[in-house]
Image (cartoon, rainbow, N blue to C red; front, top):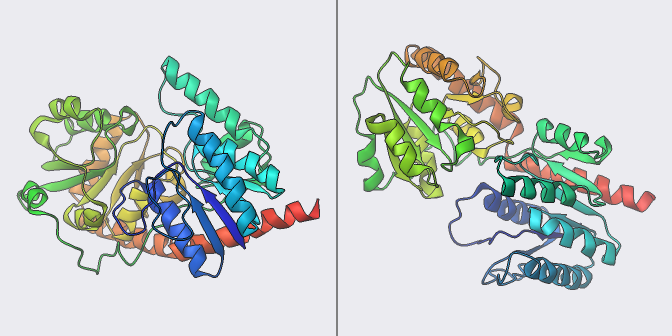
Length: 374
């Protein structure tokens, strides 16, 4: 297949990236090329690092860069004889579908998060309507990461037969309980100094309101066992959350992605108290590392976390349930171990990158064949 992949995020093939969406694009492009497909990438980036990368130096995210993306997609797509165009991010959805119509090829959008958004303010509502409008454009297929997002798209009027669950993926070799990872930098290591009998909780992610860290702070008030929280991530809520947690939590800031495996090795339990999620890669990473976890019954999390088997699930906005789960894991080392072993097994079976590449190939061929049959 000849595939043209569009994203507004800058992609590096030689440097470090932190965002899960960027890592997804790089791995899919390289993974499919490694399987014999001619995949080309258009990203919003100051420079191209590969001959198959056709970057657009960013100028303005509104109107100008989407129009430039449309022109570049038509030019590159025509030059490579593209069979299909994939748009990974929201500002490339419309350029992608318009370019696909010019080239008479199918267009697929990748939907990795809920179209409902996370905020309730006026600008959030405007953004949500904009996303819904883009999603309702005449796309030929939708790649989603979980059934929960697929159901939301059906509610928007998208046909079920246009939806393909590609899921997310994790490097199960890199995130591995038996592999000694690169050690954390000294500035991070000293933050892990804690009594051996204290449960060390971990959180990885952006410090945004929807991540539910206020619920976790409230839950710690009712935890009856000794525990401490280490947070890897940054965001606009950091200063306020530092006050809310006090000395019960340590904030590391943004930890380089190369050191995240070591983070999972150092904590006893990952906690993800989010109010909304798609299928977050941090959960797959923790499970691949055999790190037990506590997550919420939101989005695609119940699809990858089987309560009591591969992790613990609690209701969102429920500090009391969260405290109960923390107490349970703190007092039961055998349960923590079993959840870790089971989680690792489940991820290896269904969420490896090679498994995702197979799904991409199969679903892209279905979309292309469907267009040929019309």
